[in-house]
Length: 81
Image (cartoon, rainbow, N blue to C red; front, side, top):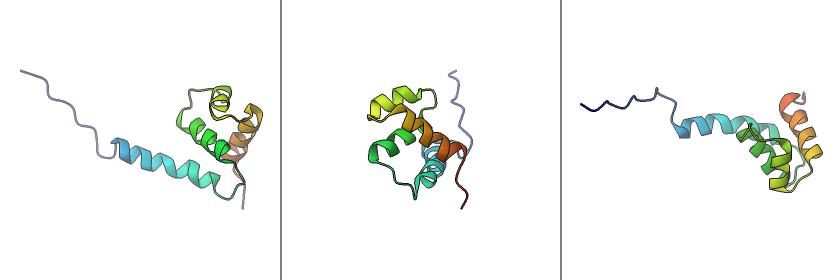
């Protein structure tokens, strides 16, 4: 007898996770003067936390120091409005 696959609990499919996780970084980027490369690099940092800032910066052609400053300013110490 073959074992039956175990179903994932409701809300654990890829689309639901993607929709849930995409709202946070996109909302944090609104209202900031960023280039397309900087925005892409920040989203890449958010999506792949196992990569270093240097790897992401090289991939997107941005300065590592600028990317790191943006990351800390936007995601770790959000501005108060």
